[in-house]
Length: 547
Image 1: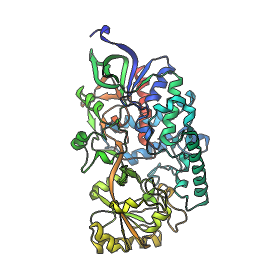
Image 2 (image 1 turned 180 degrees about the horizontal axis):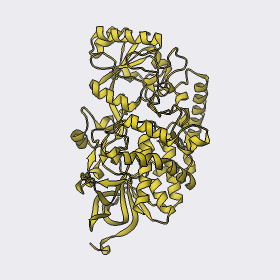
Image 3 (image 1 turned 60 degrees about the vertical axis):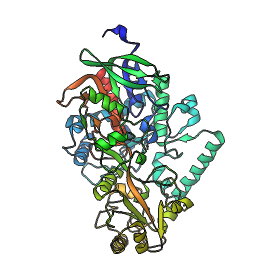
Image 4 (image 1 turned 30 degrees about the horizontal axis):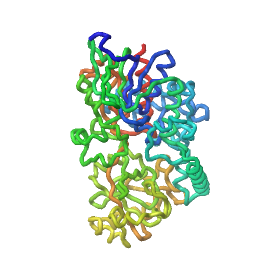
């Protein structure tokens, strides 16, 4: 193949516009290189734009500025304790070291480009009780952003379920809007922002919207080209390396685009690919249970595999236990399950998890116990706390008529209605109520970590996560292991290079994000671990590709 066969050229082609793509593009522009981001959907931002928009970066510059004690050594100890040494070829010591060392430098680089970060106060490590764990926050987010400040770029940004105009560090308080003065005040401010958005016709962005919105604005200002509705259908090999791509535009025509320095795959996982989920994932599973980007259909993983890429962790996803209301959406219950007066039981009527722990850990617990499970709560939970996107005390009529919510005047009656043994469920609830009274969960140690407490209710004593289930009516919801993206895929090294099964790198080909086997293995160390890794390894890939 000669250069005359290319329709156009760029230095570095980035497939997908999720977390990390703009970070790589900004680095390339800073050294005079020409990147090109190709996004197959009509919106920019990927699953990152739909997410909580948080990056877990240990020993980051904002911690130092705020006097939060942390170190690379402590983070290393913690990461190895949580992830372990047997998390597969995508989580080698070299990859862990690269993540720990490059993260703070990447944050400094992005700040130098004009990116604004805030520290997500209170979002402690998910296993903060382990050595090296940080009960303060190692997680970063972006300040809220007025959509009107984005101008026409806003229309290109992908929006997700987390569109509430609320600062990330106030997430906890808003879940206590009926319980604490601070929560009530945040609720008032939230209503005011919603009213302003209604008047202007433009929302105020937070979470993933503000993170990716700000990154998109920076990329646009620095001249990073991003083409939407342009999907990659082939990787082009030349002289033993990946030299470019074949991309299909919105009109159906294809173009052969040369990548002089390399190609980076950042196209998400395969949450919306039923065939791949059936082939690789745990069962049961459903594409109806995911909140991932609709572009997560997995074809770039398959294309890379056809060129020799090794795959790993294909049975893993970023699990977030959820329920399926009649509205058709998927409710995620990250904060809801942490509140008092609620437990999750398996099909045998016994509790199966520390309901307040990491959502990833709870997803694994669901699969271990058997899907589906049952959420059991009393009336106080529904009166005091949100459930999914539904605010406290507001229960739609179709929840009960559709069978989504089962209601009964006694635990025994509830058990009969949902097909559980009445004696077993009654005994389990009574045992839990004893834990709530004593403030100590002898079965799952709920409420013993700083992370557990963060989303608890401080007015509930003696343990903010434990509240008795003894006030009728009693409610039950069927729970499934939802996800926000798959966590397995292409195996890469510490530079983001794609590896073959023999460990050799495929020249010219890089990957990051949910397209790859996660450096975090099968666990989630802290809020934003997956997004942080996507950013870090995209940045490292761009640096390596350009020498």
